[in-house]
Image (cartoon, rainbow, N blue to C red; front, side, top):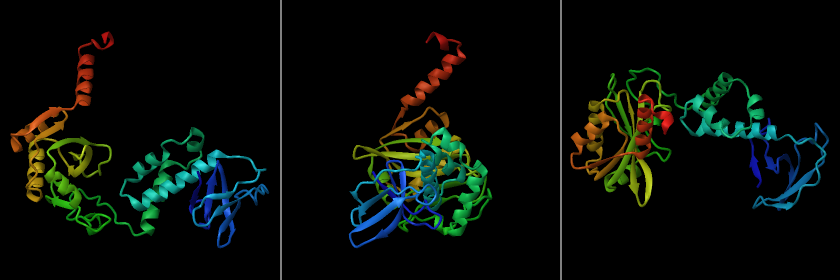
Length: 294
């Protein structure tokens, strides 16, 4: 498989990766592109290949290489490309971008990366050059930048902001997600804590079972995880999605969440998640000092 990018050269010239070797564009005609080994200058490697200008398919296989193969350099180039893509196209925290880009890399390639703080600084620099909206870092920020309230298709994404305070709630859902939220009957929900801005405690996500698939339909940033917070969340959702009437809800065994669902949706069937049940049993067995018997 060939991959052509413009991130691998200092002058952003097209670069082709194939079978562990890299090729830079030499010249082109109306039908073909001529590539030569990227080590043509440093190691005088004369390997070449030709690709179709329309399909990018190889029309003449590469000739033999005389240069030294270095798979680590290719890994580092792919890391750079993923880093730039994520910095430009996502709102992920810099640390999360680094973690995602490192996944699958060899230890040798990781050892050649700059220190983590320098990589994160590079991500912030990429975003500042492209005038990306900064995520508010004040716990009591008054409003959310308009660029963060819309989807990439320019439709409304922020649905509710309860305003500054220790119990602030932000709720996000696209138009398509709202449609599914109000037409589906079976849901599952859970919170996560690893991808949350510092100003909040958890990201709570509601998923719907729709057309035999599970899809996220609502995201909420919460500063607390008590029953009153969950009740406020569900009631806020009902303000912009009044037809949300879950028949069943699969959740974990968090008592506060269970109480909130029973209060707002008394007719819904609540079920505990098997994964969380196993976790709870495991912890209980450890407490009872019977862990090693099982």
